[in-house]
Length: 104
Image (cartoon, rainbow, N blue to C red; front, side, top):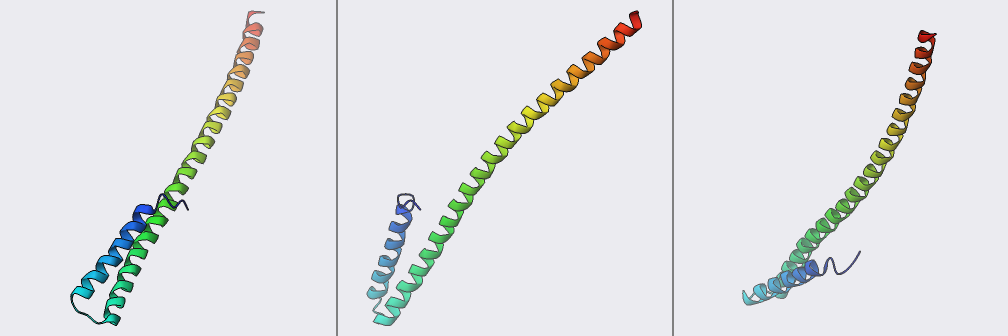
């Protein structure tokens, strides 16, 4: 996991928790309610962070599968072209042999 990709998310998570603490302390709640609200915001931010992380993993997996499918398609196309050329040359040889027999 590259930390640079998630630096923005971590910064926003930190801002979310700090702003929750400031808001709760300004509303004159007691310490337990303040930390409960901060913990709730931290868990919500963590959940969003994990969802973002999973989406990134899925994107990387899809890109890898797309690359594999593209390589397989190119390989299949090359094999089909080779088979086509082989069949065409076989048909040409059969036609030539038939033409020789007809003209004799």
